[in-house]
Length: 243
Length: 268
Image (tube, rainbow over all chains, first blue to last red; front, side):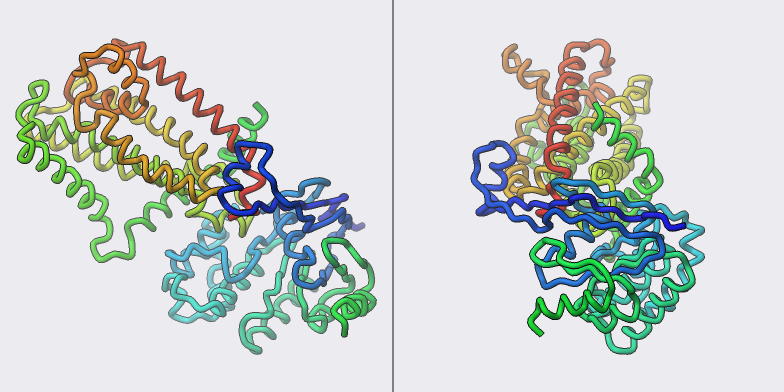
């Protein structure tokens, strides 16, 4: 019994590119302001079932991040339809998405509240998040004083500990040191093995992807080039980057 | 119509988050400085002192206004304006300020102006209470006319939340719009009858024109509670103008939401 948790149907995302901000402002009011169009994602369809782990490969600008943003409902497709069932852990880039004036601990609460958790639920996972992020006394300092590695640690820690139905990991493991990287890999493995979590994994590191995922999607210039077995997907991707 | 329902639904579903974010917005504004919360009072006090000094001592325009000391007359209109002024500029900038809620996670963007407005209103309510206390100290205890003050504050809250709703989406699209609003705020302040009594303008055309200005209406309304002792139903015409303006604000707010909601994550 598998259930579709994410479905993309002929999804296209078109960005309007104006010459400058002035043209963009005028573009709100007038129709005849010239702009260029760029299809960041072009007619992409796929389905992901519950409990699946899928890696998305692609060069920079291939449309990976745009797809993730659309799945988290941060941005919206120009054409086509996206259906998502379940709570998406929604920190897109782990180093951002914090309120810089608040401390790490307060950001845990803020994030949890925004995602609709009650204070009680947050309190239950608070210590786990703090321990995992391993920021020591910095957890009670404002986030603006954090380094990008520290932010990534906190972001990842919140992301995996709020019990999402769909876990999205976007380039997360490229920040932070080796030790933390291993900790993350283990944690992700633990989550996808023990709980019925769907994983979407975006990365350039094919080796890490292979350890989590059975299925791979290769994006190229906004189009879906390949969708299938992870080994074949890695082969396709390596052809793309000319290895 | 569908858009209105959708926005109301978002507000309802996120009602606890809205309250918490409003609180967080307050905390954020006044923390991290040594004097902390006292800034909420110090800043307006300095502003009030400056205007009082310039008018009373500098221009010798002080004396009595409508039987009240100029100082009391001044604060009864100036303090409600603090909220409006903060909302005109801060409201335009609010989505920019909270951009991480827009392009880093799923969040109903339509609620951002609401909680920013709530946070500003909270500060203003504290100041209003202080104003009431000052009136009392000067020998003017609260009377029955003060009962309509919450009504005017509510109107002010509704109007400027709607303004922020309209303006924040355009402000998110274009920094120019934010700057445009910032450069007009001084003009709005001096032209709206906050430092002079709009009801003393004798030219009837000009007077009517002034009363079309929502800021003038609201500031004069608050003064009607404290100073002039006039009920709002005694001036039904201006209330109606204001209602029309509010509906207009709803319409352009919806226009900007529908047009820009799906675009702002791509540009912020």
